[in-house]
Length: 113
Image (cartoon, rainbow, N blue to C red; front, side, top):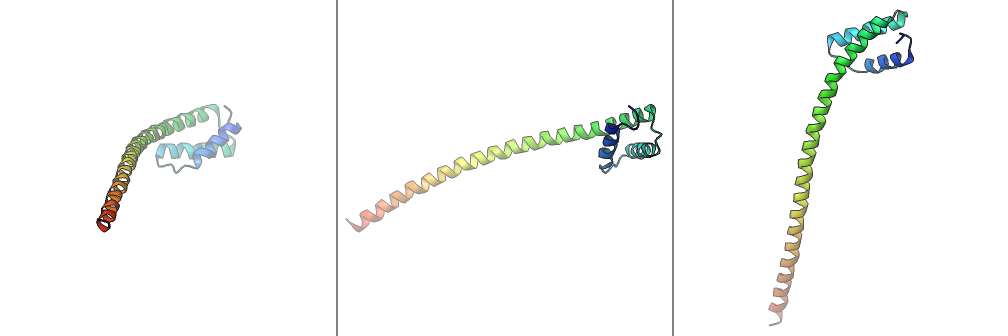
């Protein structure tokens, strides 16, 4: 891929928007930006950059997938708790309705013996 390819420049811009904490990735990013700016990005430097980007972002992907799995498990638990509480609430509401009817009947019968 030539250094002036729009796809490469777009990738470099996208990667550049990340806060890069990994020194090797940050160096690779700075190097390719400099090479692109000077028009000296050759196939070898592009290949080196792409390898470094793949290494760095594969770690991000693994981390993101693990986090998503954890969030999904937690959501499943929350949904189960929500379902259980909704059912429990329904039971409590029915109990209130039935006991209220019983108390209303007791009051009515107590006034009219």
